[in-house]
Image (cartoon, rainbow, N blue to C red; front, side, top):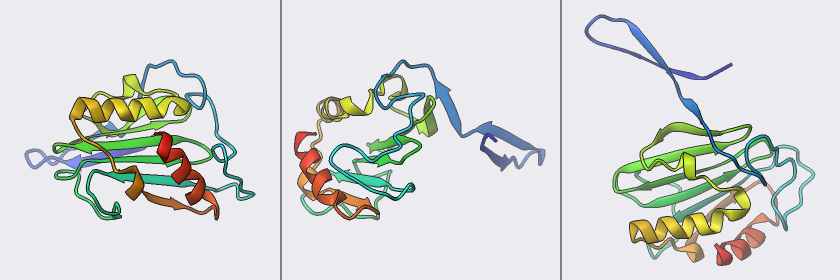
Length: 164
């Protein structure tokens, strides 16, 4: 079932619906459309079929917080789950939230038109570096917020972030 956002207009009290997730044509291979991660990313093991790894990067010289303001902050978040992965980027009061499962989808907004440029998960490092160069920002990988339900994930993710 497709999720839709419903809102009321004040003029005629009619409801307008529009899809929240819009598929975007894109050809990806490794960990792209049509694939399921199934197992956690390289270097992380879990028997839990509902595992997750989430990474939050900020530009400030302090640990990335769980509370942030998309209108003011510059952030990059990576979300990796067995059934999909995705990312969120905000900077300069604009944002893009992209999800990848059977297709690349815009989740809510894509103010930076990133969906059509979404790389395979294995190539995300170059993609993040390009965002930093294009927007003249530097994400503090050493202060990343890492959330996971896998015990050894933080150490492995921090090792991966050095290469990001």
